[in-house]
Structure formats: C-alpha cells, structure tokens
Image 1 (cartoon, rainbow, N blue to C red):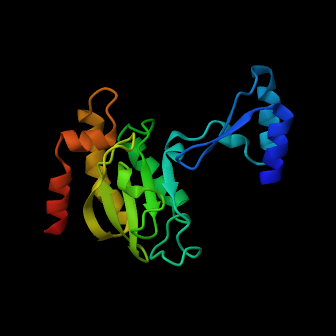
Image 2: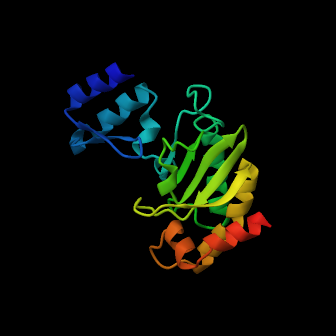
Length: 195
C-alpha cells in the first residue's frame, strides 16, 4: 500500500499530510486531476475515503489487543462496530452530522489521546472500559472520568440521554464536550453512576 501511495503521489504531484487524528490527506491536487485520482484510489480500494464519514474522521483508536502487550481490552478491532452504534445513536437524536471526537484505547496509557476527547473509552479489562467525557473538540481541555469498568453497551446507555439533551439544548456551533461542561453534566453523571 505504501508503495502504491508513493507511486500515486509521484504521478499526480500532490502532497501527503499526516494529521494528528492519524489520517492522511492528499493535498495540492489540480481540479483536472480529481477524476483520475478518484479512479486510481478506487483501484486501490481507497476511493470511499476521499470523502470520509465525518464521525470516522474524528474517531481514533490504538492497536490494543492482540498487538500491544500493555492492552487490557480491545480498541482497534471494536472501533468499526462501536463507531457504527455511536453514529446510529447520534442519528436517533438528530445530531448525526455533528462530529464528536471519539477515542478508544486498550489501556490507561492513552496512545490514542483519549484524555483530550469529547468521548473516550480506556480499557480496564476484556470488555470493560473507563468512560471519559468533556474534553474539547479542539483538544485543549482534558476529559473527566465519569464511569469506571463499564461495557460498550453501558457506555451507549450513558450517552443516550446526553445526546438527547445536546440535540435540544445546544447553542449554535457548540461542540458536545463544551455543552457538557457548560451544563455542568459531568459531575451529575459521575454521581449517578457511583450510586
């Protein structure tokens, strides 16, 4: 794949940009080359990534099990299914088009930078995660742990009423993490989960 991408870049003269969200961006492509680029990416099986799903572009995970010896839970291998369920929950509350930073890591070391995300899971044991909420979309505020040792299903159950409130009470252009902080919801979630 790397060799094919290198050949692609040489052929079209574009530039490759690595983002902090582990994405690759092909930039400086002439408008006349866009169709040819789409065909070439389709040949490589990457054509659909020219216009990635907004949630996918803001979701990140570490490799976790079985690759990392420090991992206590899955991350990379559960991400597609979890992201699909996360996106479905967002759509149910009419916020499907709004990106929310979602990070999943297999241990507390935080290789996917979960502590800066609006929603993050850090692995504690197989199938169990600590849930962090309230980081900023821009990554300049730390998230807060609101639930410990919860399953993926419990994470979605905790997010459901928060997405409902966000859908109806958010300010224009307000991100999810900012909303949680402004409404002071993080402490309430921690307290209700502890009891």
